Amino acid sequence: MMSLLRISDIAGLTPAQMDSVTAIYQEAFEAPWEMPVAELPDFARARTGDTLLGRAVAILDDEVAAGLALSNHLAESNLLHLKYLAIDPTRRSQGLGAILLRAAAAAGEAIAQAAGREGCAGTLLEVEIPDSPPPAADRSLRQRRIAFYERHGALRTGIPFPRPPWAPAEQPDWEVLLLPGRAWRNTLDGATRRGLGRALLVEGYRADSQAPWLAAYLDALAPPE
Image (tube, rainbow, N blue to C red; front, side, top):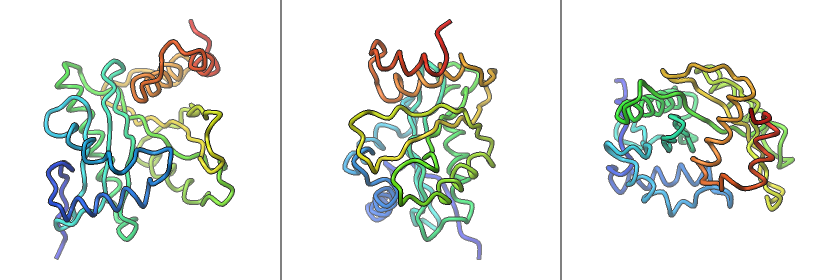
């Protein structure tokens, strides 16, 4: 008998399902530089139903939570920022990640249209750079993650996520990928890369738009026009 798969808002899960989602998040993202797991319920509640803030969903396999996808909508730039996507380690390589990725992209399109747009410009993703810290990192796993997103249409932008001087030695470096949406009309030239970098940091991470470090970072992507 085939299993029944469905996508559900995390805020609507049963306590047992929520425990599974929490465990999946902790296994994949428990690190000082990531969102604390204690913030997951509030993040999910704010991104359920018809909200324009983003989506927080789980994939259920016969009503057992098997993965999660957490995203923010960047309204000014008409982008979706897929902050976290993870699958239960025992259920990987079964196509669940692809279903979640499609669900996240579809949520971005629905939010953009609800906001009066033609569609979403695209979904921003962050992937660990294979040769970045720590030395003991599984390089092949990082490469497989990048390959997974590329197989599903994501573009390598060459945009690095800025590494703060206070970052611990074990913190990896990230590159930004873009999964184009229905409203994507650009090419990945310098000006576009600069705009994507600014959108992620200012809209996604609430960086000070006037900060000198941000100006230097954006100028390194492309000089201002």
